[in-house]
Length: 499
Ligand SMILES: Cc1cc2nc3c(=O)[nH]c(=O)nc-3n(C[C@H](O)[C@H](O)[C@H](O)COP(=O)(O)OP(=O)(O)OC[C@H]3O[C@@H](n4cnc5c(N)ncnc54)[C@H](O)[C@@H]3O)c2cc1C
Image 1 (cartoon, helix red, strand yellow):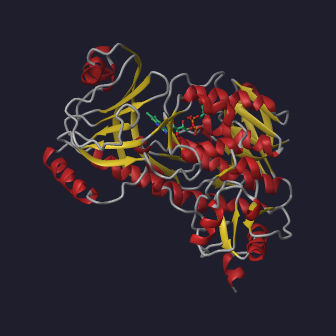
Image 2 (cartoon, helix red, strand yellow):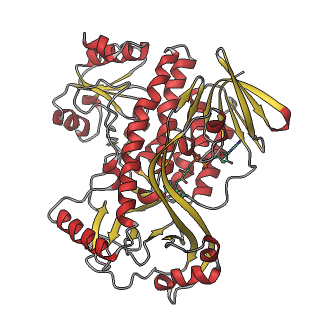
Image 3 (cartoon, helix red, strand yellow):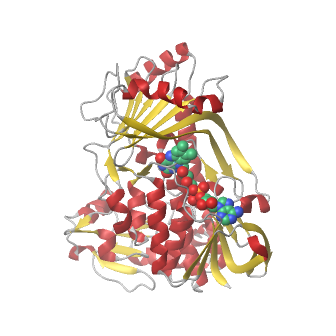
């Protein structure tokens, strides 16, 4: 019997398998296709993902293919800028650029290739999940070819149409957004044109950030990819037929304003329904949903896959503790309460952006533009990464300053903090204390230019305890944090701790 079976080796399944492989548990990965889907869906990820790739030991494989970028620009009906979510000159809390563009099939190849490093990870390609039965301490999987396998836990990373989710009869909560869009990928030899654009901030480089044309005549997104890859997404207007819009002449007419005179080759055109959906239950017995199987978002902030990688990071350290007998199974019940509000907040923001991006009434769009310009006056521009909320419940010392936030990753000399400290639970404090299962780091010995001391001073705290997924467990007195961690992991409730 395997410790964990992962259904689906898309980016989320492959990433989860890397984390669990590194943790030393036995993993079975079941994937129905022999090769990753050859065309990109996701093109953007944020800096937290780069840090997670560090944790999974795959950063050296994936980083060379990443192209760092400078945020998002939203343009109104009159082709003037209405919202700038730029990252030029902004802090880099994890020492990575705030945003990256990439090519999804390459990322998936790297994540799959990395699994060969683990003798405790078995990958079965060309095998489909067909059904399951749950018993005491084991899940039996029915697979294609009449085969079966057993695992203590299963992570369903089998995508939006998840057969596992359907087998468990888990419904999706619909955030009431569904719009048809045409996705066009092209290889482009030259700069893309943006005719008639005005109000572009000086720092914004149109060739390196994603531009959202909120033009009621045809809402569209233009995204630079890695290398000469470029992505366009065009909203289909009422009455337009998917098939007709995918025809080469329709696609050529849509990209023409951006590519007139620029040599290019369209590599695909496909329609998608963008929607906001979240599974009502993320755990049933020994089975967990993760990635698109658990939630789907309109891609307006490029966060769909990022959510899934966060799911995997959240679940992996908890599974490791439970499987190694260091925590009760109940620890895994914190997965949905921690992840669902997180995902819901960001998907709701994307749905909110989708509502104004997809506005087709010219008067309403003009009113929107005026309001957004007024709101933006004098305000510090946010970035997409600012949308990520803190974890408010679960395995966090709620009520302590900074609890649930993502912890900074300063440079330590010429290295990155996590590479210096290693993964797992880390306590940053002044001096040294005894703590089981926690790496204690005396910040007075760290060559981090005082970054962590300043972070602690801002929160008026002596110490900070960091979870393996890099979220802040809590701040306060070092010994209190260690005791609180041990209690929460053992299943003591927040109320019992407070009493
Ligand atoms: C147009 C578009 C643009 C996007 N842009 C972004 C972006 O910029 N940034 C971002 O973060 N996200 C983006 N996304 C979302 C992102 O592509 C998905 O969130 C991500 O691919 C989900 O990964 P996953 O591993 O959960 O699922 P998938 O990638 O769908 O992988 C599921 C895997 O499970 C396998 N599988 C399915 N059923 C079975 C079965 N029965 N048995 C065995 N295997 C099975 C499939 O073959 C597949 O390999 C975008 C999506 C779209 C459509």
